[in-house]
Image (cartoon, rainbow, N blue to C red; front, side):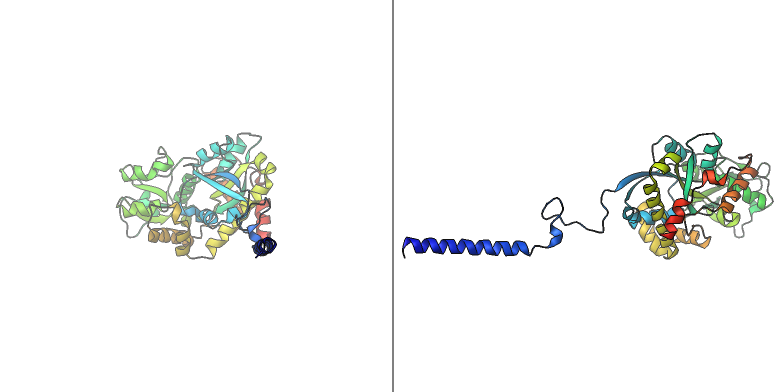
Length: 354
């Protein structure tokens, strides 16, 4: 075979190899090619890019706030372009302080905190833009087992109710008055114990009763330190108990964030409405690693039983005025503040329409 024939065969083979390579490249899946020409990085079109991190301070960790945890775990915030950094403030005053000092962007506590700040005359005061719970979420835990509990049993007893001026304290006062007891004369309300230390102080023998959120109330009973005898929220009726708020300046400058946040909360509220306590417990269990799944389910059911959660993020004016009446009766508010100064339902209304 002469030299020219050999060269011709080699050229033919090279051409065939190049043709095969071009054919394979032409059949490469489209989703393996990205805008920055990086090969091999498959992007999920359903996963939002460039998430905005928002710091949120919650008043306490409780299954009472299950719609919030569902919204985080089910990815509702991420679908709205938000990554949540959640910290537990242990008390409404601590939550408000973190918001006013710009340590966090959004606070989650009782609306009364925003009323107090407004009355202090702060120009850039906070506004509530989404409500989550509509009843007191605490349960009355007794030192002794009681077959037929009566609120009159508290007469002459010591109760650990939380911080004076906070919604839990004022709601309990309201319930006591409703049941014929004078909170100033008939009962000793020990407000000297910090919110996160209440269960421990009660277990140590410091009082006859304590008000606790779930799952702490059930865990206290399981440990043999007390007995859950009543729901404060069931007895008190509806009241705007916990809601999300931010400084007016942050809301004005970050409307897209507030809207996305409210959308996610609304989705969380709807999800818990349409799912069983067991299903909710399975979703939120990561937030309560030390609590048995069955206990979580029971605690969540106790909140479903008293209709504790809002179905929408809207804080109605009638409900807001009821809170102010409780505050006035408790001696914590001299006169009502304008609803429009504290509550901004713009984003909640859009979330529902969306």
